[in-house]
Length: 599
Image 1 (tube, rainbow, N blue to C red):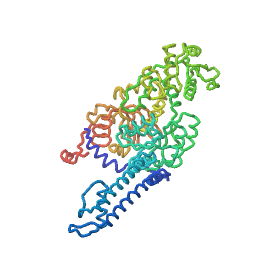
Image 2: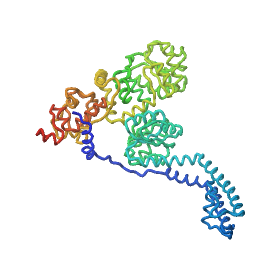
Image 3: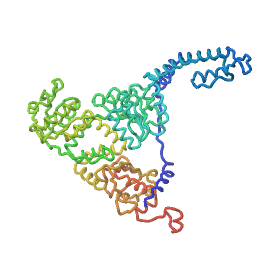
Image 4: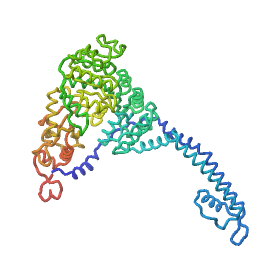
């Protein structure tokens, strides 16, 4: 019963005509960098003024001399060459093309003058070409050309795009996820090497990239902050001040744009929140919350990690955290303080180990020393501990801490912090129970918000449902969709998203009825509804007997084929009739005329 061609034409002619346009508020954004680019090019081109003048003078003098020196025609009579003929002769002579002596053979005086002119033009061309090569090698000239090329590509964008500030590990992970979703984006970064990496990466669409400072509002304007198709700003650099400057620029110049910004400092969180309503992502705070969830509800943490990882990722392994016991935390920086706070909030007893006495002045029970030292770990109670956290900002130290702690207590639940992407194989080899990669935490959270807002809402509300509920949902997902995460999409049951359900009113189907297959209504589609939103109400993983209503929004996860089949049910009246009522209704006027039935 599913007809992809019919679904395509229905979507094309019926859905697009009612598609609401997103209102765009246009603000005047400074474009100083674009003006600077043009001015820089003309200023740099002034370097070619002297070589060009030399060439022009050589051509002029050579042409003038050739007109003044008399020649002879075919009959031996004196003859003077005109300016046009002289310029023509000098053009092909000086450019080394060569075309002979025209219109008559030259006299010895003319040949002597042309010989002198040849050497003069060779010197002039060498001077001009050398100056041009030196100009091309100058960084300012290359930067000006790159800026103009970048601004031209951004101006030509006609589809919605995101402005990504920072193409480090977080920006790259997020860019690949957005590209897989078919979303366009523009990237700026202060490191030229990262922009070079951007151009070397293989994306489905051309990605404009620029070496720029996010603190300059003019460069943000060139990057598309004022573009009507810009739909959001993602400030993901490791510099909190740069992220704050980008947040301020977006809030003041484009208050209609959503902003997602990264920081690891609680004080910076407050400063960023003072400008508009940005979504501030703190990877340390988020890891602390996730660690509490992993300790309290392992199945919920497994489900959260799986949904944030993106389509195609396998179901992660479920941990076996300790229910109670003593914890040892090595490293009391920003990350360590956040973890200690969250562990104590869960009722665990925590001992801090830190080499610097100044860092633990507010922790009277802290142990000052190196965590790799067996005596220090013994003093911290590692043998009776249930959990251990290696949370310094050095990957080599964290790996040493994990090895020392497991040597003293092999049954520990170990959490560790990975700071560099290059260390990933080493941390995978030691198989820690909970691993913090700040870049991945930020990228996963931002992806969850951008993929669909309903997914973000589901992730925020899901932990409150409990561990048993999450375990049951994981079982349902793996049974219908397998152990790799499939597509995640949203469905709106309105006149645009589901025209086949238009006018059903109180006769709207049950959720289980809607998920029947158009090929065989007795079979269920390989899809699970994660969230149903009705106005201000929301229902997580609603059952099959959940009665749908007009204007409901559904968040589904399932196979791409299930998405196509569900679209056909929502778009085509005949398929709807078969799926909901088992009636075979003709879809064309010819068959309706033959059978005498109407759709």
